[in-house]
Amino acid sequence: MSERPLYYLVSTAGIPNLGDELIAATWVRYLAEHAPGADVVLDCVDPSAVVAPLRSLHPRLRTVSTLWQLCFRNWAAGLGAADAVQAAVADPGQAAADLRDGIGLLRRADVVHLTGGGFLNSMWPAFTGLLSGIAAATEHSGGRAAMTGVGLIPPAADGEDRIRALAARLAVADVRDTASAQLLGDTAALSCDDVFLYPRAWRDEESADLPDVMVSVQFTLRPTALFPPGAAAPAAGAPGNAARERAAQRGMGGLIALVSKAVADWGAREVGVLECWPDADRDVLAATLGALPRARLFTLEDVLRRGFPARPGQAWFSTRFHPHLLAAAAGASGVAVSLRDDYYGTKHRSLTDHGSPWALARCDVLGPQAPDVPQRPAAGGYLPAQLDAHQAAKRRVAERIYGFGPAAGAPHDGGGAV
Image (spheres, rainbow, N blue to C red):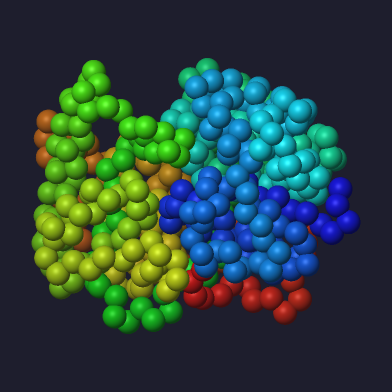
């Protein structure tokens, strides 16, 4: 253990992607509120890609990429990466020389905390190494191991028992949806997504000039080509690649046609288009902006600096999860559109199960029939009492991990951007 408290966050920040950056910012902000004198390490996908405002939230924040690199370097092993990462953390001499200092830091932490998101599933089985590495580090140090707000659906094939065994080695295993809680069984604590720790904090405070209709879309059903970072894309002439590309283009065209029809039917005076994951969204956003009249782009960097562009009275069309959460928290109405039911559908249902009145629609853009155009939503967002309840539930999870009570003079929740 270190003389100064050392809190070690393991986060998907640095992809960068809106929800992942905000989850990281949520916990860094929490530690700034309760432990400004502690050392805080953020182990993230790519420290150089972390959006700049996050870095200023805690005076003693340091960014590294240690557990993530161990997972990436054992990528081909799939679920077996958990064994390789555990071995490297238990005996740093087995790790590559450039990671040994980072592993030493991990093994000294008072708390090692895997923050939330939907990355422990069948799409990225090697990320089970994050859990095994955390368990190995805290079993060495006597520190506290936790994960919060994770989604585990769909589980990796033959990976359910491994996930349950890894979660059982943590002091706190908190998940955000019912299906994930059922997968873990008695080990799990079910609360909600980590962003509910500050559900009102990320809203744009100057929202009067925001468009009355907002669109958040992607067509990256399996963004595995973006992991590990820097991996070569499949060659254009690779077997099956041309067919996959044609299917992707057809699916993206179908999604944009659906969005265009919905925007027209909803009578939008102006449309805002939200960027969440620049690398993954580039093509679909360019096509969407070209197809929609009077479209205005809200970039990821703008949103993280100015605040999330939502207000009461808006109508949202969103395939993405965190725009659903944040817009509903701001009082906006919306339709959540699932492009893959076992993954995105589970995520969106976790919000409607927690009180979001948004309509849910499934969009099989690769199916033989055009999806139905949803009616303009008008049900609004979360009730204030619901947000307060979710925030209180998430704060109880935080207190189980860190042992802090309410910070003296700290606001219950605040407005503004990262």
